[in-house]
Image (tube, rainbow, N blue to C red; front, top):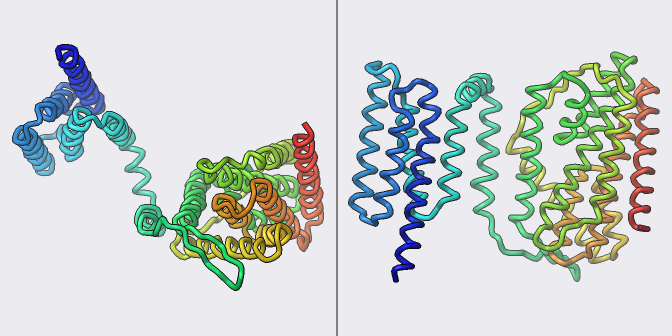
Amino acid sequence: MQEFVGTLLEGEAVSLVLAAVLGLFLGLEREWSEKTIGIRTFSLVSLAAATFTILEQPLLVVSGAVFVIVVAIVLGVQGLLGQVDTLSLTTSASLLIAYGVGALVAAGFVLEGVTVAVVSSLILVLRRELHGLASELSREEVRAGTEFAIIAFVVYPLLPPEEHTITVGEASVAVQPRIVWLMVVFVAGIGVVNYAIVRMYGGRGIAVTGFFGGFASSTGVVGAMLDHVNQRPEAANYGVAAVLLSNASMAIRNLAIAVFFTLGVGVLWGAVVPLGALVLGAVLIAAVSADWSARVEMDLGAPFTLRYALGIGALFLVVLLAGGFAEALYGTGGLYAAAAISGLVSSAGATASAVVLYSNGQISEAEAVVAILLASAASVVVKAGLTLPSPNREFAHGVVLWSTVLLVVAGLVTGLAIAL
């Protein structure tokens, strides 16, 4: 009994110390910003919350929370009225966070409490950057962020987690709506991040235009390069490099889908070496064949729209059903043909289709890997084909030549890896 009490007290003591430290951590930025309420007050607020929570007296917990809320409101009102120059609504809100962190830690939610404290402190430290970012956002960008939050945090949880079977004749394909939509969120998220990067660093070289642009739209990169090299024929070499780098980002995206979405059923390691060789080869060729000081602007349009999300979802679903029914009706050959054809339109969709079919047990690991590689190769081929009509023959021939070399090298590396 004595040992149990000692252990219990030791655990509670640790919680109290941790709560005080996290409160101190939150108050550090307020102190640095020369606010009247700083390290000591924040640490004491978190410590009080932890103490009341450990005592398991609801009245104390509620009273403490009400007290902090009243103080926060008073301070906020004083700040708004200009009665106190060194206090602000941010400080008031931070006090509430400090109280919550102390309660979380004492209740046993240590990881959650630490996470809240660290994230809150980061938000406080980055206040200037966040204010600057908010002031520069356009209406379309704010709307895009809201819509992305809806599809990621509202639509996804509402979708049924159960597997549904679609049957046509004697063939059937199992579909999990949540998995399909999660891939929509995944690819759309890549597009949003890419948009932010291009918006910040656009026009600073082919690495941004080609590589990051390829995450959102590799065909968009080809279009931008076609237009640019037609106006500036001397820029053909770096146009070729940009297209190759878009192939690298395409391969990274497909590899991420193949690995991330198969963690629970057996990762498709067979896709790592071929796609890795594609990425490395594209980067190396671009590094030695281009003028990296050249600049080009790329207009990606809106970062994200619901129409775009619905289009991705519909495309994934169509490609998934096409691949599933092709495999069910025509065997492995049908699956590969569907993957190659789908890859001409969306290698991400074809990759997602193969991953879902593999996760559902409808195709083997080897079949899934081959389907992903065929889709990725088809994406490289279609980008090369899009450059053929260009009047700048140096650009068109360069893309076709280096794309061929890239595919051959990736194939040789794959064969060597299999042989070893």
